[in-house]
Image (cartoon, rainbow, N blue to C red; front, side, top):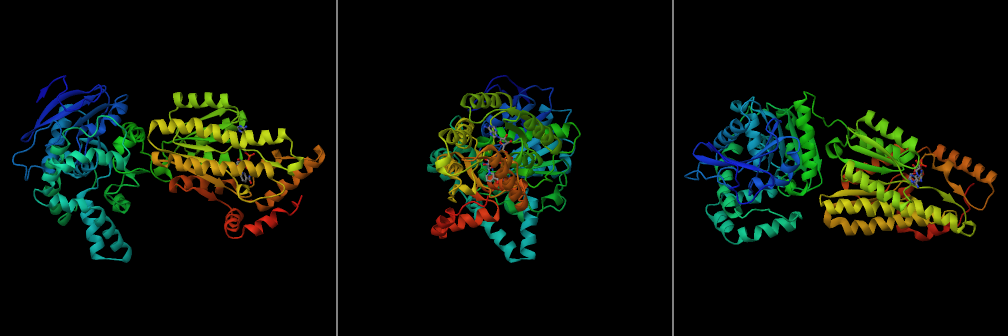
Length: 594
Ligand code: NAD
């Protein structure tokens, strides 16, 4: 083994120290970042890749950990075995891993992280006896254990049900490239020829990768050598999977839901192989180390810290914990009603919550309760969403202190009822300022941060069924909400290409205190009070809980839904607005029952 402080690889990772580690018949190119006294996180790349795929994740992790990456044999700056055939077996790859782990962290087990084939290898390391005690935790992304997969296929062949056959065919279709890689010579010729030249552009476009240093110039050689990863292992292991492939360390499984190569169902039975399992999902394609480095660094950090601290790793007990755990969620109008219920639902899913409201006390209470419910961190901010400067300050503060928001919920809103002719310009201004401008400010400021970060996100705007149900008594409120609906649709179209979803929620009649604060125009104060009381009674009788709206908000993000009517009357109204708009116009003329 030799050690040197210089960069020999094709592409430098900022701040990395490079060294070479000798293993069975090859010399591995190893890069190290961060403080060696800290726990070691060891990152293994996939196919066709080199260690640089991890560069963005590595620099983020290096703030807290000793981070180690190496080029798999035959890739990047590592030498290739001779001959190639038989040189890439999982046994040999395990030798390499152990040699690197012994070199960089001789006295402590490492926290292993693998992507794609790096994860396939990782499963081998974490399930074979000779690596027991050398792995403290394993984070797996987009690369199943070949043993588990072999059993998965066998089970489905033995007891085929229509669903199981569909799963087999589905995964079979996604694995088309595996068959191609098994053909002799063809992959090598393609990679060293046209495919090698075109691949960087193809993957950049398909995955919308940010620019910079990736893939590396060694790609054609990496890809040609790496074909042996498949040839040396796939057929043999899938046909004869090991029966004892149980994980000897806690495992965190990160599944990108839009991965074109792997179906989610592959992991259905994973708990039986890895009982200490934490599941995470995210809305992304295959190359998440490039497209979602912030999210990965945060999940890896949380998992490593939990394991190091002897705490049980966060487990997916809440409905959406796998999706929102550790994410930063900002909710406006969070002091009560739908906003508070939404903040709580995200807190239950393990998100970090910023509760924003005009009502400082209410927002503080929401933040406090969010922590008790499950948010690892939560904060309250007192801001008037209609105040542009205050919102700008909020956006700056949140970015500086808590990070870029993953999910923004523009929910703050006020009610206003009364005929158009009784509505003053001042009334109009107020309702548009909060209901529309508040949403515009939120989308503009936080949406810009999301877009600039380039790692996706989601914006939820609380519109209303009044956005598509005309009414003689809600001209200003309905107009503000129709504008929110259209703004959401336009923004959704604009941001779709950047992995940022936009949803408009249309709740219907929900039992919150909006009725006691809603204003009624054209009547004196006493009559206004009477109407508020009467509306509150009506809403109370309807008694549709804000928690159901909160549930719809989380579902809308998970499913990336565009327009989401919530209560039955909101659904019915939406249907009527499409099928029988004339009937709605007739209903709109009726005097409100107040
Ligand atoms: P709510 O009155 O219980 O909650 C609204 C919250 O927004 C309050 O905490 C209030 O302090 C806050 N807020 C008001 N103006 C603000 C401002 N300028 N800046 C910051 N915060 C402000 O009402 P809710 O029913 O929970 O309403 C939430 C959203 O849902 C609103 O946009 C509302 O229009 C919409 N909505 C409600 C219903 C319903 O039936 N309750 C139906 C459809 C849509």
